Length: 276
Image (cartoon, rainbow, N blue to C red; front, side, top):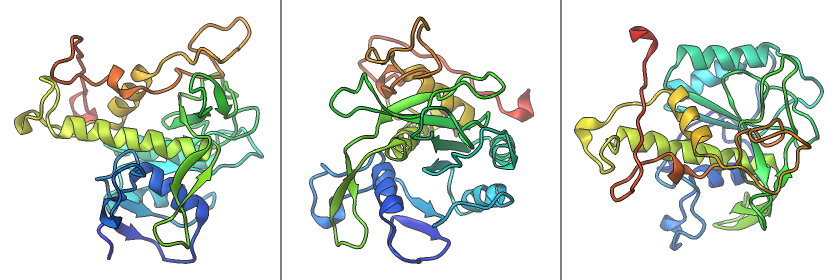
């Protein structure tokens, strides 16, 4: 009945990996007397949680169940390093993204050298990890392209030496490293983008409820990619930015989001299926 958790499939036992990633996306240390230094990216967000990854036939069921219980931004820090096929997991991710326009799915890419599965789905945001001490350098994450030639990963975020929530300890933290840690950072950023539009910050830069609308997952994905910058420490031979190793680079959300007092402007058009 904690205010942060809207739904869980089961309580199960504590899991260090899932606890850590959940904290990075939406952790809030305020109720425990914290000063915000251990907040996740979107500390006001709620969580729904599946404790295990789906079988080959369950992905769409899992995504739809999370959607029904309030989940719109899905962060996944797991995958299959044994294949690069566009298989049923990938098809289900893309089917969910098509049929639920306000949903967006994040996947941590493999920590190996080359892109695997299911981060090779068409409509998910595939996330790699930058180095903590030098965010312009590659920390972890396999490079694309997909077997059918699409550029992946899309974006990067800090994911090494990340301090977040620790399982099986009261109000404790621990450090972890990998693309698993970067995906929830991007998901939390996506939640902020979603709130930006829903609170009516667009187009004037200040909250105006009458301007609010629910952004599509496609718009959120575009905002993330558009905010990204070239990771200057990444070498990919003669390939120019963007490229198959860093995608569109490291997200800096302020590059996309126009707020009052900014000198630059932003124009976006979000057209749902029903209107074209």
